[in-house]
Image (cartoon, rainbow, N blue to C red):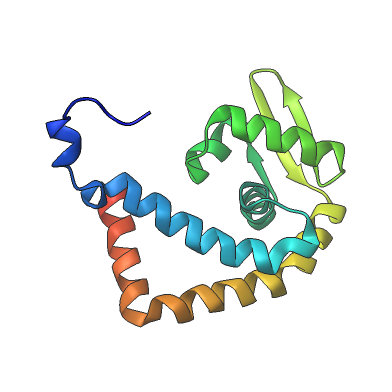
Length: 145
């Protein structure tokens, strides 16, 4: 059914000035590049982030993981459970301080992903160009600072 009245605010708004929309569109474009390269590994970007960050540190308190990656607690908990069930991580400690450790299986898995992750990163860098990458670094610095 067609509109029956005028909506002045809607008619006069420019949705492309929305910062969240610009960032979300950018994320979707870059994520598509990574999904294409990582498809064979059956891993999400948030799972890969967990593998890389925990792998780099060897272990991390679960409470720190979400803070480092700026992920919701529920996302971290859900992804960790799946990855613990697959044998990529183990959880040790009591309820007040649970520490997540990467296993050899997890480290081997992330090592198998890294070449395709590097290819995705290179494609994204090529698409952005040096000035685009510098602009992205500036945006992140401003938002995180």
